[in-house]
Image (cartoon, rainbow, N blue to C red; front, side, top):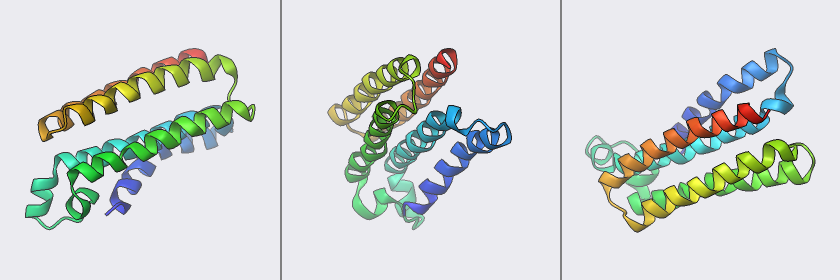
Length: 150
């Protein structure tokens, strides 16, 4: 059930990966690649939870149809936490400079925490659609912040 989500996430992140490879700039774009892939994975899992009834009707195997929508929402938090840890590790290893780390990390962790708190406190399928939209908006905000600090 997770393979489709991973394929979509990789496809989205590969846009930046291949651009970075062509320009020989992988180190500079690595945070964007990780961010795009992991945050897209979280959003895809939330979208599965949102679409659980239709997916069940058509026999589509997703995390939400196999384990339930609430479990899927909880599991969607894993890539968000992994991303926060990866950003912190990149900073602590000297790969991500402070001028990039602080604005990106702060603009990531605070809204991501707010979005997930919103999902968990107000959980129902209508709110999942809104949460998915908030994640897209947050992704755009992070791209702007990252590219303004690079």
